Image (cartoon, rainbow, N blue to C red; front, side, top):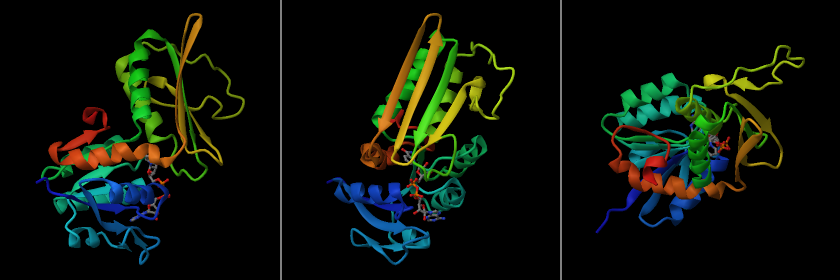
Length: 255
Ligand code: NAD
C-alpha cells in the first residue's frame, strides 16, 4: 500500500497558502498535518492548528512542506527544512540567482522544487515563448497582478525572460533615446528583454509575451483567474518531490 504523504504548509493564512491547505486536505494520498503562519497563529485550517513556529513542521513529522510566503521568510525556512530532512515545494517568488544557488547547496539530504508558476497554462506559455524567441528580434513581457503583490517583476515574468534569453541572443537594441517619464520602457530583464508590471485591483495573475519581427507580431497570453489554477501543479509536486533529488526549478519535468 502507498504511504500517505504528510504535508505541512508555511504561509497557511495567506491567499495562496490557505488555498494550498484546501487542496492538500482534498487530495488523495496527501494529508495536511501542519500549518505555519506569522498571522492567524492559533487559528485552524482543516482541523490543523496554525502555529507560529517552524518547529510545528518537525513535531508533525512532515514529509513535504509547501512554502508560499515572501522571499525574506523563505530564505530562513528553506535551509531549516533542509537541515531537518524535509522536502520543500516552493511557490514563493522574489529569489535572486544567489538564493537559488544557496538552496541547491542546502538540499543534499532532501529535495526542493522551486516553481515561479504552478499553473499548467503558464508553464506552456513559458515553453511557447522560449520556442518562439529565436524567430523574433524584439520581445517584451507585460505581467498583470493583484494590487497586494509585494515583488516586481513577477517570478513568472523573470523566469520567462531568462528562458527566452537562453534560447536566443539575437535581440534588436532598444531604440529609445529619451525616456520622458522614467521607467516608461519598463525594467530591463535578461538579454535586455523589457518587463512591464501592472498592479490592479480585481486581477489575479496574467501575463502577455509580445514578440515582433518584420510585418508580424505574436502575442502569447495566459490568465490565472482563480488561485485554484495553481493547485493541480502544487499537488503533483507534493506527490513527486520525493523522487526528484536535489533542486528542481519549475514543474516542466513533472509533466
Ligand atoms: P499573501 O501575502 O496572501 O500570503 C503570504 C503569507 O505568508 C501571509 O499569510 C504571511 O503572514 C505569511 N508569512 C510571511 N512571513 C512568514 C514567516 N516568516 N513565517 C510564516 N509565514 C509567513 O501572499 P500570496 O498572494 O499568498 O503569495 C505568496 C507568495 O506566492 C508570493 O511570493 C507570490 O508571488 C507567490 N505566488 C506564487 C505562485 C506560483 O504559482 N508559484 C502563484 C501565486 C503567488
